[in-house]
Length: 47
Image (tube, rainbow, N blue to C red):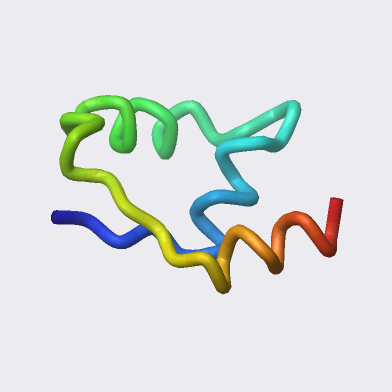
């Protein structure tokens, strides 16, 4: 299980994300990726 924080999630939605970062995250199985409602609400507030 990998818990993604707000910084990770905000990097994923950037128009120009770091390619090394994207390859690292995409190598992880989606079924192992989680986040919290707090992070989702922070992103919703920022965007």
